[in-house]
Image (cartoon, rainbow, N blue to C red; front, side):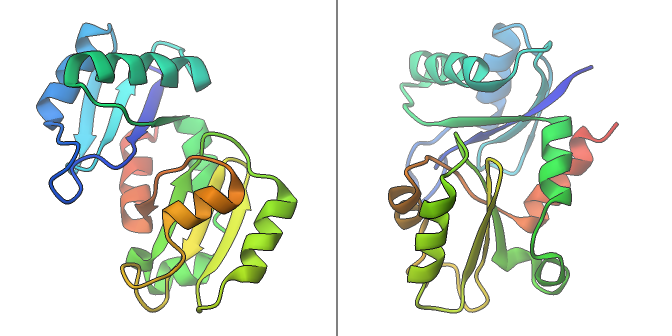
Length: 180
């Protein structure tokens, strides 16, 4: 079985872009994917993608969600191996131990340019820190995520990449779901 994790961007947040997880699993089954399981109601789904990966799989899932739900949103997919590597690459392990709900990992559509990451890091005025490792962004929010000026919209605009964030607790639960 080749388990894949899909992260939907900004679904079931503040009453917008509502998607029932049972319907999401049904859509994946109709597309021929097996073993679909969801975590929480925020658009995290694990399934057997039968070897399909990357941008082609993301485009297929985005088109299917738009057709079935009228939902135009990004899908970010990672294989089990890619997600295990992303978890292992966390540049903030001490922070993850101390405050996992305030550490965010954000799978991005593409790897941001190093100079854009450096410029963003230099512009941060709060205590937040951000690092990029491949197609993942790692952001610490030691004070408050909701009050931070380092929002996903700011990060995306400054880096020129689309992403979606999950806290470290969710990241670890998903890693456990795809561990072999």
